[in-house]
Amino acid sequence: MSPWADLSRSELTVLDSVFWCGGLSRDAVAQRAAFSKTRVNATVAGLLAQGLLEEAGLQVSSGGRRPETLRLNHGLGVLLAADLGATGLEVAVLTPDLRVLASHGEAADVRRGPGLLLSRVRALMAELLAQCGRKPRDVIAIGIGVPGPVDFETGQLVNPPLMPEWDSFSIRDDLRADYSAPVFVDNDVNLMAMGELWRLQRSLQNFLVIKIGTGIGCGIVCHGEVYRGANGSAGDVGHICVDPHGPRCTCGNLGCVEAMAAGPAIAQQATDAALNGESPMLAAVLGERGVITPQDVAQASRAGDAASNAIIQRAGTLIGQMLASIVNFFNPSHVFIGGGVTRIGPLFLASLRQSIYHRSLALSTRHLDIQYTPLGEQGGVIGAGVLAMHETIKARGVIAS
Image (cartoon, rainbow, N blue to C red; front, side):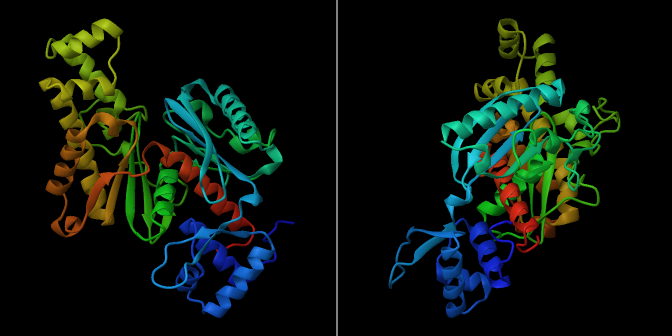
């Protein structure tokens, strides 16, 4: 029997409010839940007695008595979060209110298949739990993000272009060998969107999160909820065509924006510029290391390399061209940009913004805010923690999303 299986509707509403805000005063809970102070005080007292909430210190006074902060009780256990990218992974242990207790990131290649990669993920989870003095039985839930389309109900990837060996593989069953906690799997960009939704305390209702790395994906928040579509493939914008005569993409089609402006495309264009004599600076990098990365292009751009500037501007312009169509269609209030390519510098964001504003309708961009995601590189594991906690509570009776 779960600790909150038999809670009242009022108790569930209070838990939901406290979780999404990372901690609230009783007065703030009353405002968010539209409850009277008497009702909130009685409900909170019950949740404190059951060990589901705890008081976590006094807040700053607004003129009267300093209010006590309520949060999910750390005694409930911990969350495990894993963010798998095409070329790297990060694993973390978090408290129920999403404070990172321990984390580790390293390079990885998802094309090597699920066996090797998940074996490493399980080893890191065990190491980080031990580092925190926790046991597998202390794990409340596990959230995992993967760089491909996910059938959310089954937790399985479906024909993922970047990781074909993972098609229909059950990540849940693999982790059940070590943990009895529920496992939730979602697209990595959806997790970034959930992380932003939690950071914003659900104050924004309609926004996009774009991840630009080896691939390009989009997390969609619509009416305050992550929108996954009919089968979990909503937001797979990297395969929108921006040039019908462009190069062939991993999906088999021609001219996808991912094939023309994601990390590998930037690196390939830089290599071509080095070999063609267009950039002595990039040629020097290629001669010394044998490969050129997007970060090398960024460094050359900051040093004034014209060819690198042109490559970065073209990538930003093409991604902005794709996003302009999405902005016209969806009319978001914000677009948050994340992923490894964001480290390429301000010229990229400026080019992307200019392209969106140039190609979008005036009404769609009148109040549009385009910025890098504030959560940065931790957005994936924070989002995985949000997924794990939210879905676990929801499955046990808390307000459905």
